[in-house]
Structures are given as C-alpha cells and as structure tokens.
Image (cartoon, rainbow, N blue to C red; front, side, top):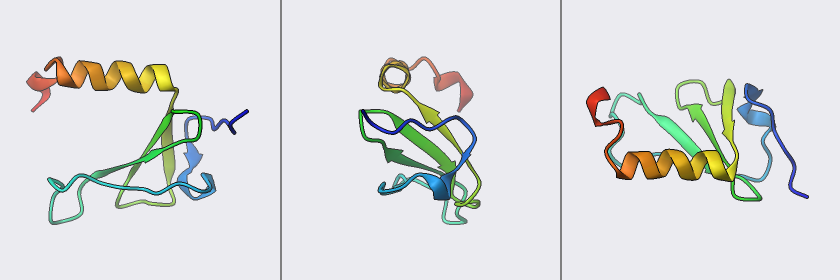
Length: 78
C-alpha cells in the first residue's frame, strides 16, 4: 500500500517525489509546484515556501480537478 499523507503535511516530509512547476509560472517565483505521489495522488506546495504545508489529493480528487480544468470550469477565476 502506498504511503498516505494528510493535508497540511510539511512538504519536506513527502519522500521520493519530484516537485515541478509550469513553464508559465511567474518569473518572480509566484507559482504552485506539483508532485505525483505513489498510488496516483498528487501534492501541491507553494514554491516560495517549499518546506511549508502541502495539499494532498487522492487520485480521484486530482482526476476530478484536472477534468474540471480541461472543461474550463475555473476559467472565471483568471
């Protein structure tokens, strides 16, 4: 079974992941970084606070979010 992490876990405690950010991120470092978790989930952290809390999502939650982004459900937030 893959290790599970609670929301708010310090990002530095999530072992064995590669954090990445979009090439469209701000040159000032204002961005969110994403890491794939074993088992298909995902974790997000603030690039300006890489040791701070991470938001952790199950595979189902992450898939629902990506689906919503693809469908434009969040476009009004831009």
